[in-house]
Length: 376
Ligand SMILES: Cc1ncc(COP(=O)(O)O)c(C=O)c1O
Image 1 (cartoon, protein in one colour):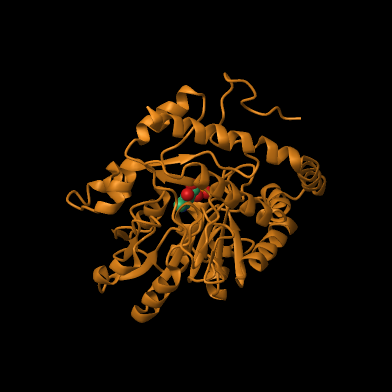
Image 2: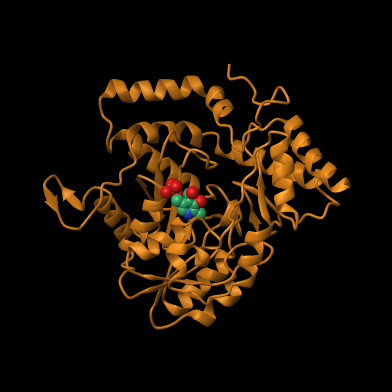
């Protein structure tokens, strides 16, 4: 049995601890890995196909294609939707670097729009003002597992005949207006990086789409652009989800609602324990279901909080300390761009440990450490 981290004061309470989840379903995981090894089939075989259809059913989308990572899912979605050189893609400055990186990789220009101060998601209210002749797509991130205002963004995209690509890398199973995220756009990209709410035992990703031709193109792109053996019609990539990861993901997909429900319970426990402190607890848009891939609060004292937690051997993380338009690799193209809300949030945000197996007493320990800090 994996020992519980932090049974003693000197033990570290990690930001994410995957050992318990893997212990809980350890037999199933070992069995499915063993079956793949016994089959001798490791690339694009029955587990990838089955995972794609099970994920499509869960996400209520017509097509799902497994790829090597969330980054690749977004990049291949852009390529399959013909977004490229000379195009502009409206996106959020408050996300993981991959969101902007893939736009640049396909030769397009990211156009950053400030975020909503409550949800930290791309502010739909500011999008139309930056649409130009060159705008090919909008790519919002459902940040931390909280759906963006995706119905409104979808309406804007339809009005201007531009594509909608959802960065769902942190939001498997999140819901907006009764529909799972990923099902609104022309395409959605998911990540199965191990610490995600649906995590593989390595890298993995998924593109979902309502368009058959986009799904077909991504199937080709992930496999060197091939239509059949030795026939290459597109300039492709090696970006396949592998059979072992797909088999593991099939096991974990069975539990995703349980995992997401538990994340929400933990978030609500934190909310209660942190109430009445000079902290902004996460806002939840009542039209959606936030699945709390991260539990991120705002505080003027975020460095003190991080240091206090660290002094008690509790890990925390800053998601994200620098908005994308200020990252060196991006900033040279936007030296004067000011996005006040995103810039403010990056100075005050701090994420606390959250994962389905986080023990009650640790939620209490973490919250007490923070509230005690504010007493002095
Ligand atoms: C918002 C967002 N977009 C894209 C990615 C990229 O996913 P991956 O790490 O699977 O390439 C991530 C993962 O960290 C993410 O959080």
